[in-house]
Length: 154
Length: 294
Image (cartoon, rainbow over all chains, first blue to last red; front, side, top):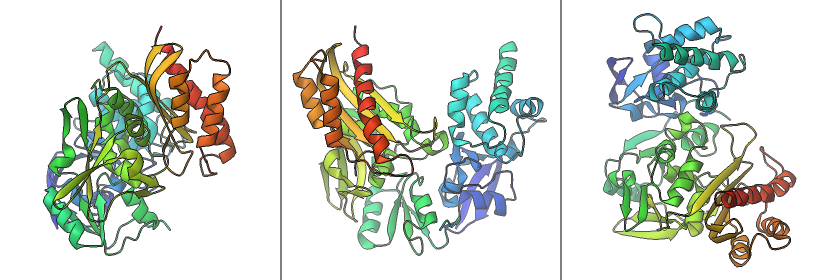
């Protein structure tokens, strides 16, 4: 079946099997391998993408379900250079092995869209579904705080 | 065995209730697909057979997407997501309790897809949305060809993974009966980590707090401590008839809770631990309600 949807502001048309998952279409048919697969069961969040602006586990969604939808992956974050969140991650050292990072970034990008000044509690709550074994979340939270501080100063 | 992919499943999107019912009637190899957050993992780990099945997408059926307030009752379409419910600002006390619980379900990513219909029909004994629905004495609207019926939530939930639902029927909505706006509610979910985990024990309390020592028409529901989510009818009766100042009421409540629950050892906690923590969480929730009134 052919499905049409927007991904990273581009319209795409893909022929998929009914049982193909969104993550395999994004990675293998569209070549966007930024999204990672780890637990496959919707716990770890490494596969997080934004579907109509909302973070979702792409390992739990059939490609067929995204007909007409708008998807954003990590490859779509840098428009005129890196996004402010990407810059902050870099400056604050919030990336170690980097495997959780695409998923974490998508969740936090969505968070900052809905709330420009999240509290630390809200940031950590938003990250419930993004497991990071390396950083202990400290520098990730600092990165978000540095973005909100910069927003304050504007 | 974890298979990361689905291989031979077919997908059908039902645009209307009519079409969904007709497919459920005419085929025996159908799984209803709503949010997919329970179904897809179950197919991947082999909990249910994946080969040659049809996944029937019900998310777009209008009857499952209606949120209505009719004669002070709240009608929540079965395809509403946990996020949508968690963000509700409606004042109906049972909906506030439901929203509190919905906000703890899984993770943000899961909440954006998981539906109330799926959470209830999956019928985990730990189902987060079951406690508030039980406290509300909610009704489940079940639709078959040419007829619909309302089933009380406590009768709908039969056991672990079992609900009162025929193969050719579909849950379309949940109905919360009227409740005065001054009912108070509290939801407590004990988990190992701050998010993501299934409950060790979940407590939902709803009641009219007359004074710090009297609660009227209290409803208490527990999850994860019995084969299905349960109401504590005997504790409710005790509280309706007695004041919190009565001697040893904490002990009486504890004893009644222990009588009502039948926890098991599982990945999250032992039965031993649940027996110790469950009465304490129940008291904590009740005391929270008492503290809301001066």
